[in-house]
Structure formats: structure tokens, C-alpha cells
Image (cartoon, rainbow, N blue to C red):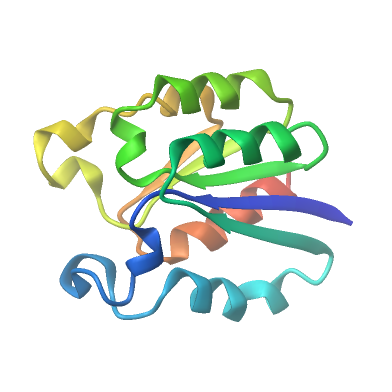
Length: 140
């Protein structure tokens, strides 16, 4: 059974409440629970933190034993060389996900330190981006 880590960064615990015109009204956790049945041959492990070090620790902990990482690092996407280094250090391939289209937003959101360390990027497709990233990683 393949194991996929779904890693969410700061403020993503507020999706469903925060700026619903951008992020929608369904929480990430509720969405992930709703799609688990679509992947009966996979174990999806979800972790969210508002703290950069905890995200890095989780990548270190599971990045050598899991089959893939879906990462939405939130604002850390645009600021964290440390998260990019953690992704580069582990063997699990990663897919970067953004609920909104970061390229249609403020200019500072257009750059990602993580993209070069990921197999691909999914942005602007809402919560469905998580499902697409899991599908991709399971088919590698």
C-alpha cells in the first residue's frame, strides 16, 4: 500500500472560514476525508502546521519512507529556502499544490522556492488540486 503525505502550511487550517471567495467554504480536512475513499490502495497521512520547523520535521520524518508528498506550504512557498532544502534532501517525490491561482494574485506570490524541488505544480483548481496531486504520485 502506497503512503502519501499531504502537508499543509500556515493558515490552511482556516480554509472554509478564511476568504471563501478565494478558498471556498469547505475545509481542507473535510475535503481530504471526502476523497479518501477514492484511493482504497493508498494510505493518506495529513499534517498541518502554522510553524515552519514542524513542517520541516515532518518532511524529515516521513520523506524517506513515504511514496510521495503533496505540499501546500501556504505563505512559506514564497519565503522558505529551508522547506525547499528539506524537500530536496528526502527521497519522496513532491507535488506543490495551491488552492488559488498564485499567478493571478499579488506579485510576491508569483515566486516559489519549492517549485524547483517538486515534480510538478497544481495551482488555481481549488481543493481538487490535492486529489490530482495524489493521483499523480500514486501513478509514478
